[in-house]
Length: 261
Length: 306
Image 1 (cartoon, one colour):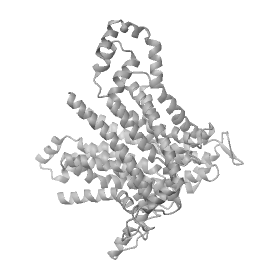
Image 2 (cartoon, rainbow over the protein chains, first blue to last red):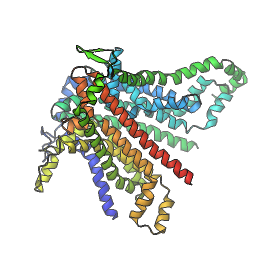
Image 3 (cartoon, rainbow over the protein chains, first blue to last red):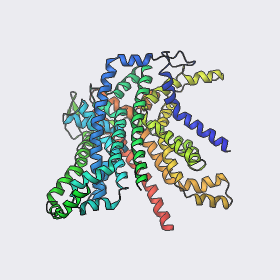
Image 4 (spheres, helix red, strand yellow):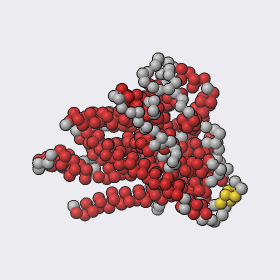
């Protein structure tokens, strides 16, 4: 019985990981079409990707969007999380809701709404449009991460700062930000990873300024190209690095906190 | 460091802090609390409201013009292809939510209750990994694997089976949806199952329940909220997904998401695309409210009974 259950769990994990592993393996296969048996090992698809200026250009755009998005959405998310933590005010539930709802709306619908709105106000068709939309989508994640950290902050920490004469600004700078710093870093990495992977909204609003995932989407829609595997493996490594960095920051800080206590 | 703070406190900074309070505090709240209202109000709430307004606009000579016409609503609501697409989207998303819920449950049960904490954490980390891979690349890989010449048909061929057509149909779409939602459903179910009070399970054992009775009488009722929420999320995500029906489902006949893209691409039919989008938002809104009512209504009832 237990063996059967384990076998079953293994099958479900195979389903989840098959596309990731297969894509990785075939990115190193010489054959144009991914079939069995595997042909010779080769890095030809990576070389092809690197040799195409279109890819490098779109990757550069993605990096710009991801870095601006991560900083902006982390700042907005941090401020909003602190407001929710520190103050009780009229409409607080609504305030938190407009902060948290965007990821629950299908990105397709967000994309259409953004395209229609931004083109009416003359802001569509550029990297700034992608940044605007990605900040909307990423802020909730930053807000959630920081809010979680704030709820672990000892109550008397800020009270002590106030008693010692610090005003809001000073206690923010000397107490709250240092305490939340690991969550802030984690939020920067996670939001960057989300932005780097997002293609649906970007596809609608980016116009001619294709980001990397939009480039991949157009490639996939048209033909079968093993370059997709190479790009996928590359971006997977990049996102995973960002996420692992976020984890390392959080865990290292937790350890330090435990030692202190 | 400590000294300067003490000095400031000694120097009557407490009073200055109070005195400059209201203006400084207003600025403080504006700087940290304002950006969310500004950004999400302007770029999230306003676009959604404007999309609804857009459903009443008209397109004349390939130009959008502000209007108040019900023509777009009539055109979409009277079109058979739109309702076919609606049902197809709902069917695909429903299948995905149902299959994901049933398939993930034994897995979550094993990881949540039948294994060591170390394996559980490893499992949870593994389940999170796909969130950071490109969904686009995963669906593309499924297409190459499930195609007529693909890896799967090649393996089935060795067994003397097939070839089966596994892409450009509903099967393909559902595989795509499952790729999208399975990790999330598994994770949410795992959370809710690990939260069940172990003493209840032991009690069930002591009272003579066999493992199956325990699962159906203790674990499923205990994890009910998580299971329902996970299935709802799965439906929402699949219903709005564009990639699975496009890359794996063959895009023809279309789902609602593909209709939206067609309307936007094919000559500025933004008002009609907005009508479809509003239909989707309303459908999902009703569904999520029902799920929430089920989850929260159920728990208050239970609380009252207790």
